[in-house]
Image 1 (cartoon, rainbow, N blue to C red):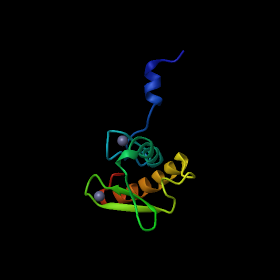
Image 2: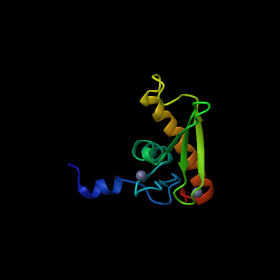
Image 3: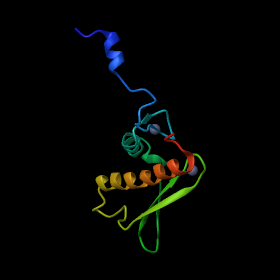
Length: 113
Ligand SMILES: [Zn+2]
Ligand SMILES: [Zn+2]
């Protein structure tokens, strides 16, 4: 038999634990850095801007900080219309770009405090 009280005691950790919690800058989601990182790539991919350089054909992914408006670009030499451009690759790019954003948020806005 599992009592509800005991379950509650076992769940979660206190704020004094050393695990750093991150908060999603777009919604109420929070978790470990890797969890927030995945969450961003899966849920907030539409916050990324995409720009294609007409001259080189390279695709730029642009992430804009929701707090201060700073933006970062990640270039990929694969064109979006390239038949080899699979959605898995897009996911990888999202992970890279949101990693930049998380570093920025950590460094500039202390979201992991
Ligand atoms: Zn979110
Ligand atoms: Zn910022």
